[in-house]
Image (cartoon, rainbow, N blue to C red; front, side, top):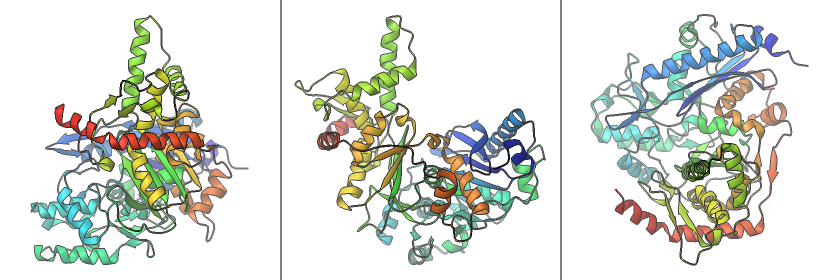
Length: 532
């Protein structure tokens, strides 16, 4: 029998995970059984400064300290105890982006986040050079674009990091990142579980004539796999994290990871032939591969699990925003009739109504493009609903087409993996807002992927729990225990969630819709061009 939560915290045996999401910084404290026992958070927003999406250093540190303070207050309120020490800590953040520092540790230009699409030339040239798809948001694309732009700061660089790597460095003094985070900076060699040496040499040769004083391997953080020692909280780091001064230095800190890796840990999808789909405002699917893809694809990003397995990622900017807008319209309609609307009931009713619709949505077509969509080649978007005079236009089909289209671009990308590359998957876990109404989003995703989909209660804990699990793995794993084994044995212990198998008629219907979706893309393009 484990200790109760109060004793666990008082004896310094709890583990802390903190994740910097794009709108919230979340802290989660877990016990010796890896269950969440307290949490704290801080809301924040990115700023558009001189055309660059960024967060200020001040916002980063204020946010970290506030989320920790909020967690400490939750612990005090629930258990009447103060946090003085911990068994381990982990930090994670949204992946990619660019933070270059000089020899004095000063940030040379404002943090360029993953949202910036300003590296088109760089990623085009690097993709060609490496014969490997380099997305715009990757760190190396930002660095090379700065070189191409002739930006003055480039010659002063001594260290380049991501947000997670920066926080870890400031709190531990160690310039390291987890391999999953590193895989969003630069391509990884799956055999060595380190940066791809051939491509690093190609990069150095490419920029050789620029007369820079550094090589890429000198300025990038060291790459570590899950479970490796990544340093400990320094005296200075402890004061930076806990401004009350109670937290002691010397606490082990695990390799910092990206939100993709922590999502994999939180959904128990780090093993080969598993995967997860996160569906909320945006949507992405991550499938852990048995082998490399036959060729690079513009639509597919390759990253890794926190322990270095290759992962194919399809990332789409748009998912539930347009769906939510339509639900809000129905809410407004009901209120005009004096009906007091419970939003959970409204979502549940409308989502379930979709299940009564025709399998192919009765010929209806919709695009949920609030913004551009990389997978289908759009730089901007216009939400759009269109039908022919003889389409079956009713509420069930209307709701169904809006659910289908929320996964439309994702389906286009996934079809490359599942149909062209014949990627095999044994288990997919769905998490995020789309799955809140029981059984509906899950059924639609099963149809889109023609694969069983599981939904777990704990998946809602998200990335902060995921990085806490990676910290727990570092200090609690048995000799030779892999991350996959640790998660199965100590965290999920047979809990695979509620599984739903695909319905053959749904699958066929979604495929018919997908052909209509692809054929109708010129309509969406005309809307973008005509509606400014």
